[in-house]
Each structure stands twice: as C-alpha cells, then as structure tokens.
Image 1 (cartoon, rainbow, N blue to C red):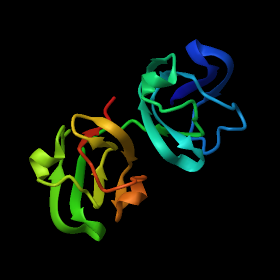
Image 2: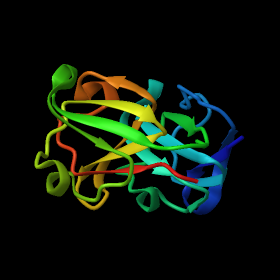
Image 3: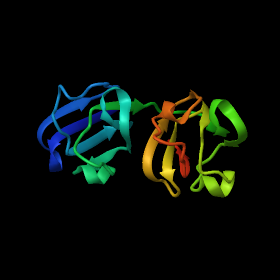
Length: 173
C-alpha cells in the first residue's frame, strides 16, 4: 500500500491532498502542485489527466518543490502507484513497430541503449516481467516513461513523443 501527499505550495504548505491508489484526475482536489511527500511506495505522477503528458517517477521521500522531481511546472493532474514486484525482470526492445527488426532482451538496467543495442530508436517493446522506466537520453536523463507488463506495439503507447530511448532501468524497491 502506498501513500502520496500533494501540496499546492512549496515546502509542504497550502492545501494538500492524500492519495493511496491510482487517480486519473487530481485537478478537483488541488489547482497546482508545488511539493510532494511520498510516505510509502513508488509513484508515477503525470502532467495531464488520465496518465498522459510528462511523467515523473517518485520514490519514498520529500520533494519540496517541483524542480526536485525534475518537473517543468507545477502541473500534476494524475498519479499511478507502482506495485511492488517480486521476481525477475525481462524486457524485449525492437528497432521497428509491431515487434519488427532487430530485437534485444534485457534483464538489467542499461545506462546507454546505443552502446548495447546500437540503436537509439525503440519503436516497440514487450515487458515480460517487472516494471521498467525508459529515459529519453543516456544515463537516465530526460523524459521518463513507465512501462508496465504488456506489449507496446508503438512508442506512443508508452507515452513517447518519439522512439528515441537513451537508457532504461528496472523499478526496484
């Protein structure tokens, strides 16, 4: 069970809202979000309702202003709790849509997809075990994308604006 608290103002001030499950629409609870406390669990917060827009991965801890979670602004409109995973991790990435072209399977974090896969574009993937984060740039930088178990036939299905993926890591607790 997870718990996250959103605050309208910096440094955990102003109106707040506590959440312990996925919430596709947060705007009715607060108009802006300038600080967050994650009391338990791991969470993905989204810039827009229904789990779309910029995504930010948050672990247990305090984030006194939106720059601490790498936010571009004070807009948080939905959140998703990431369940704890017991077991292995496995993901297959493909150079073309619909699982076409060269495929490479990973069971561990990868700080540079180009160094391992010799491609910077991932057009589709299949998450076989565990939850993963894709990052737009190498060394876990840039836009983040949550991948839950399942098939992603095109990059826009994980929320990507382009197929460019520089690195990926497992979500571990």
